Length: 285
Image (cartoon, rainbow, N blue to C red; front, side):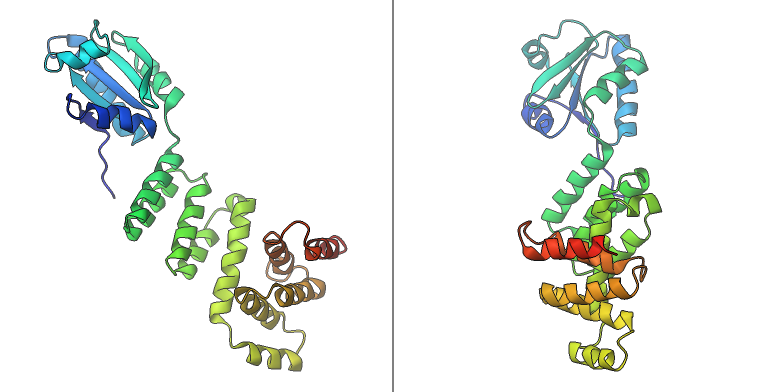
């Protein structure tokens, strides 16, 4: 598992980066404390535990006011312990004195990033840095932690596709629970990847056409031909084959004829005459 750190110690030299800049990307909770103040130690222990539990949904930064008097003065800290929550470069909430755990949780929840959002941001940062395997790993771990959030496996499938691993991407979506597979954005990508995989495994077009001429009822051959033509951006030919599949057997491969037509016309402009033509065709069957 990729290890991440969520607790830091601030000094005047790193405060701008740790607190101000990081708060533009997510919430930063600053714990102002001193070793001689008993409640400070209890607060620090509790906040560190919450930082680990929330696993990156907020960043905890510790300021020892005995050592960093200038920071305490800068932010008007007169009571210990004190907490200030920073967002978008400035403090947006503060509490003075030791609070109950539920109070700290409520403060964090008001501003904390959703775990799925944090995971996506981390994965895209890794991907942009060329660390593709780590990005996929972070998304996989996030999907386990947030099993009801479709956006994590969806992003994983998109990145795998970009990496030339369409079969792996298709497998990710195929393994989702039925309720997630039924979400429109998942269905669209699943259909698209199905065509990519189908085209990659299909014989050449000339061979498919010859086989279909001998046996027009072979819907598997029509699907392979439609996939081939889709990847060649020949939408007209692909739509004709998908329409024929839908006409002959609307339930073939879980309605791939209808799903394929809808996936294609979603890429067309709304005033393209093919959109109206094929929507009318689907409404008739």
